Length: 423
Image (tube, rainbow, N blue to C red; front, side, top):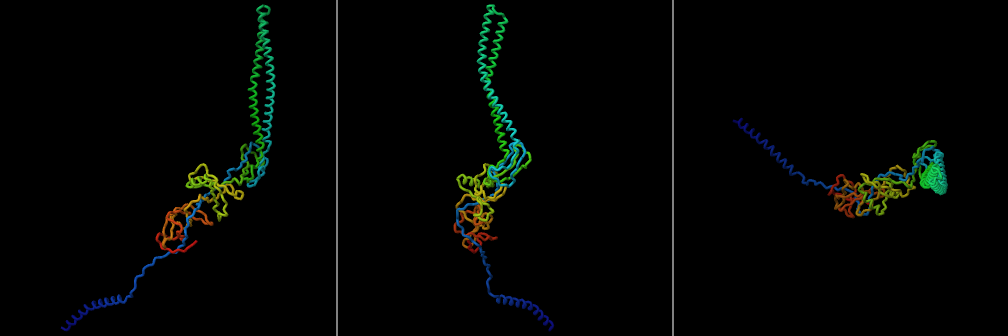
């Protein structure tokens, strides 16, 4: 019986022991909760980005167009051989500077004097024939009067023979001879009349031949003169295609040269600016371009847009520029040059650096400590103090607005920023 009570007490202990452990654990957890320090969870602070800003000012500005041009010599002089012949002298080389009237190339004059001598001889022959024709005409006129007088006498003789024959005082043979004499004399008169009447037409033929020979002689004179190729102006020799002792044919290009003052730069102007520039030229406005590779506008050589091509191309129209100081331009035909052409001035434009424009459509302004995105139209580019800038316009911008210059990779409207003022 005592053993039974012992087992019953052990069972109660086994039952109460887990409950005791659980209760102790709950009390320990509650103690730890009550002993936890009292503090609030941290709230993340909004980051502020430091940016450089620039105050915008509305201006009247001239946008620029970048044009790729090629130097051309539209008034290039090309000396061609006036006829077949042999080259006697070559006095210049490619690149030589020559003066007006200087002999560039000389052909053997003997190749051209023969034709001139022949023309002169033929002309002298025709003039002699004209003189002879005048003398013969005068003689034919006098002879015609005599032949007509003889014809009249022959008629009278025939009439007399006819009367005598009727009176049986002459024979048939005498009458027939009188008739033959009249016919012969009539033939002579007709020949003289034909000679007198045909004089004018023969003289016209000789005059026509004379004019033709005179033209040939003038042509031979010009060919002889052009056998010496002379420089028509001060310029630079660009090509020499012959050598002394060589033979050339008529029309062979012997030497070419150009004048530096006549050089032009041809460049393609985009079609969207064609009407604008055409109207400006028609209105007498001076449109100036400068070499793009110059450090400053003061150092850049000026080129004036003088005209537009008569025919347009798919991409636009060619513009022709002349250097304002041709003698010091240092240009050569065929050279490539990049020009920056100033378009007509426009009001309501703002200057901004290219890095301040996002996606070519918008900029960011600083308003009330946050970014404000603004859509803009890029009117063009320009060069200020040696740096390329963009000219923009927008109805959402006002003079005095502060442009954000610092380019932020996460730029978006509402982003908090602080300004670092810059000039």
